[in-house]
Image 1 (cartoon, rainbow, N blue to C red):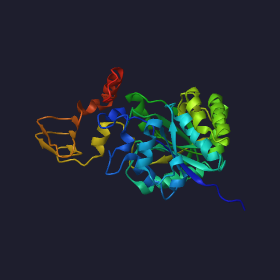
Image 2 (image 1 turned 90 degrees about the vertical axis):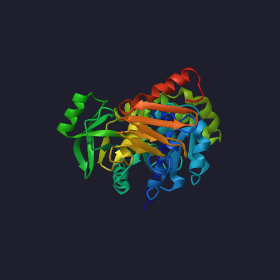
Image 3 (image 1 turned 135 degrees about the vertical axis):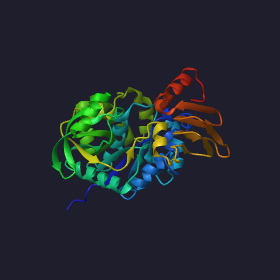
Image 4 (image 1 turned 90 degrees about the horizontal axis):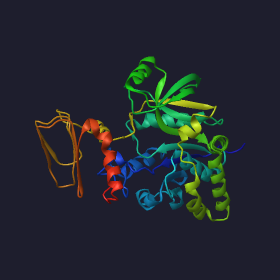
Amino acid sequence: MPEAPLDWAVVMAGGIGSRFWPASRRARPKQLLPLAGERSLLRSTVERIRELVPPERTLVVTSAALAEATRAELPELPPANVLAEPLGRNTAPCVGWAAAHVRRSDASARIMVLPADHHIGDEAAYREVLRRGLGACEGGALVTVGIEPTRPETGYGYIETGEAEAEGVHAVRRFVEKPNRRRAEQFLAAGGFLWNSGMFFFRADAILAAIEAHLPGLATGLAAFDEAAARGQESAAVEGGYADLPNVSLDHGIMEKAQDVRVVPGSFGWSDLGSWTTAWELADKDAEGNASASDALFVDAHGNYASAPAGKLVALVGVEGLVIVDTPDALLVVPRERAQEVKAVVSALAAQDDPRR
C-alpha cells in the first residue's frame, strides 16, 4: 500500500501592514508584531498549526528584506524553509513558487496556504476546518475557507456557496468582489454567502496544473526555477526572473477560473486584523469602551485605543473614538472610523523617501 501523502503549510508573510503604521514599518511589519496577544502574528500562525504540520514541512514566503527577521522569529524552521522573494508579485507567484518547492519532494502532497496576519479566537475549531479543507482537496479540487458572516461587511470579498459536496464542504458558485453596503446586506439576508478568508488547500500537482492552464506565463517562470534548482542555482534564477512573473492574486488568476473549486465554511473567531480599528475590537476594554496596549489613563473618554512605548503614560481627556499610537519617532492620531486611511500616511512618506515609512 502506498504511503499517505504528507501535509505541508505555506505561510504568506510578505506584506508591509501599512494600515498599522507607525508600529508597522518596512523593517518590522505587522506580522512580526504582537498586535493580538503576546506573540507576533507570524509566530501565532505557525504555532497554532503545529499539531497538523511540523516545522520541517512549513514554508514561509516573505520578502528578501524580511528573510533574516523571519528566520529569527521562527528559529525552529530550517533556514531553507523561508523563501525570500526579491520583490512582491502578489499571491499567485508566492503560492506557485512554494508549491513548486513542495512538488520536488512529493507531487501529491496536500498544502494549506495561510496568511501570516490573521487572528483566530477558537483555535480548536480552526484546526478542525483546516483538517476538513485538507480532506476536501485530496481528489484534486482547489479548496478555500469561507467565513460565516456576522455583519454586512463591505471590506471583504464574498463566496456564494453551491451544493454540498460532503459534510462541511460545498461547491463554489461564484466569487463576488467587495460589495457596497446594500449588496452586503442582501448577501447577509439571503444566506449562502461567506466572507473570502484568503486561506487555501490543494495538492501540489493540482495547483501547479491549474497555474499551467490559467497562468501560463507564471508556469513558464516556475519551470525555469525548477530547472535551476536541479543545478543548484535556484537563488540566482529567482533573483533574475522573479520580476517577470505576472503580478496577480491567486483568487483572480486561478480560483475564479478553475472548475473544481470548493469551500469549507468556518466560524472560529476570525479577523484579518486589517487596521487599528480591528485591534481595538479585539482588545479588552474598560466600561467606557477604551482599550490600551500600554500604560493609559482615560478621563471622561469613550471608545478610544491607545498604544505607547513602555514607561510612557498616555492620558486621554474628554475625547471619543480616537486611535492614538505613539512610537519613538512618530505619533499617530486618527478617528477610529478612519483608521483604514492610515496607509495614506505611508504612501505620502514613501513619496518623500522618508525612512519613517
